[in-house]
Length: 72
Image (cartoon, rainbow, N blue to C red; front, side, top):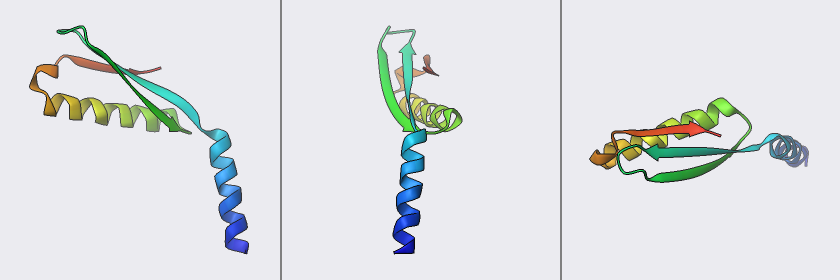
């Protein structure tokens, strides 16, 4: 029962602190735009996720080397 209460309290605290961060990516070559939404409680964590996603896009699609992503 004690573990359940701790888990419930942790979940409520985390859920109340989360924010929506949007990773907006623009490709200057093709003028293509894309967005990825992250729910997290730290902007630095959202920034890391956004950077990781941009890196994967660049490595999978060679024509995306001019892709730039920012957190909004």
